[in-house]
Each structure stands twice: as C-alpha cells, then as structure tokens.
Amino acid sequence: MQKIRIGVVDFVNARPLVHGLDRERGVELVRGRPAFLQQALRKGDLDVALVSSIEAFRSPELKILPEIAICSEGPVKSVKLFLKKPLEQVERVALDAGSRTGAALVKMVFAEFLLKPGVVAVEVEPSLEPAKVDADAVLLIGDPALKAKAGALEPLDLGWFWTDRTGMPFVYAVWAARKPKLLDTAMPLLLRARDRGLLERSKIAAIAAEELSLPVAGLTQYLTRNLRYQLGEREIKGLERFRDIGVTHGLCNRHDVPFASVKLQAT
Image (cartoon, rainbow, N blue to C red):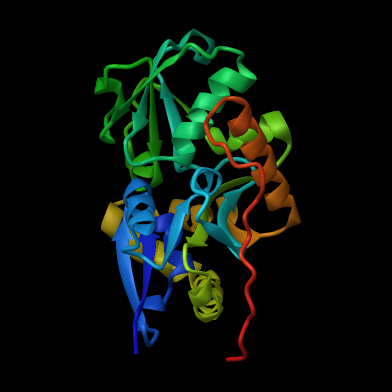
C-alpha cells in the first residue's frame, strides 16, 4: 500500500488538524515551515499539504480541500507585526522568511489599507527579540510570534487588523493537493484528525505549553477561542476578499477559489 505523504506546518496552531494522523494506516507526515511545504508540494515530494492560503492563488496546479482550514475572526495572537514606530511611519519591514500568507497580509496592510505601497520589505529569519532586527517593523508568525519578547515594541495583531478593516474572518492556511485522485482517500483522514483534535485542544495546549515554556491558559485560549478550524461560507468570503486585494497589488494572479471536488467515502 502506497503511503499518502502529508505535509503539515510545524506550529502549535496546526496540531488540532493532525491529531492522531500519524497513527493512521498509510500516512506519512512531513513537518516544516509554510515556505518549505509549498515548495515540496510543487515538486511532488508531498501529496497533500497544509499550505499558506495565498499559495492557492499563485499555483495553478493546486486544489483546495473543502471544510478545513486555519482561520480567525479578530485577534489571532500568532501573526504579529512588532512596531518600532507608528504604523503610518514604517518605511522598512522585516518579514519572517518562512511566511507566505502573513507576508502578503503585511504588504496589503500598507498598500491597500494605508495607501502606502512604497514600504521596503526584506525577508529575515525569525527572531524572538524583534527589537534587535534592523527594520521599522518585524513580522513573526506561528510559535515565534507567541514566544517573542516584545519589550518596548508595540505588537500589532494582524488577525485583529484584518477583521477590524474588513469585518471578515481571515484564512491563514488550507489543505491543498496536486493529485485529485488522492483526495477521496485523504479527505476522510483529515476530517477525522480535525474532529479528534478539536475534542483534545486542552490536552494539546497543555503539552505545547510545556514544550514552549508558555502559560497553559494562554495556549488553551489560543486554540479554542482565537483560532477556528472550519472553512465555512463566511471564511470563504474572507478568503475571496484576500484574493481580490492580492490580485490588485500583484501578490497573486488567480481569480477563482480552486476547490477540489471530493467524494467522501463511508468509514
């Protein structure tokens, strides 16, 4: 039996989506940062991967699996722009080199919402001390954003910013695939994993808190209140708005939402 190679972001926010998936027969899990997973999926090294939502509108070969995503409506806690000066005065921003959707969202903040398209963006490796990075603002995503020491910097939660400006949820990551023939097999596995994970979020938070040396209560709130894992109608509307802004500013070029046609099998 050929294994399905599934790529997953190596962050706490993805753990509810893959809970117990490594124990499913015929599954091989590959962990990595968003940029790595996207490259591996494009090369055919992965069959399905949890990828940055912006990539679904950049890669014509990708299909999005329905129903599941990593989303928020309001503060997300793990996508932050650490500001050394007021947002309107930022001229140079450092982007987490592993980010794709977060990086695109930062560029939209300036080009779309602040009408300031000339901000210089450079990629850097994530630092838990953003004050030491040579930039007016520093983007961190995932676990580094949760652990970073803000010090005197003002952290801007980009999930909050998006919802404040648009009134919509934001979709950070989606399951995507290149080979439609595998989707009917993969989808039930992913739905089962998600449903198990949603029931075990408190336990997942407790384990992650010990690993990351973070308060259990904060991580529990993060996984149960800040994040959502269902891709419903409102989330799709938010995804479409994100795509439209991306197309306007040359951050992506695909005008549809490329959902895969999946036939769920009885389990």
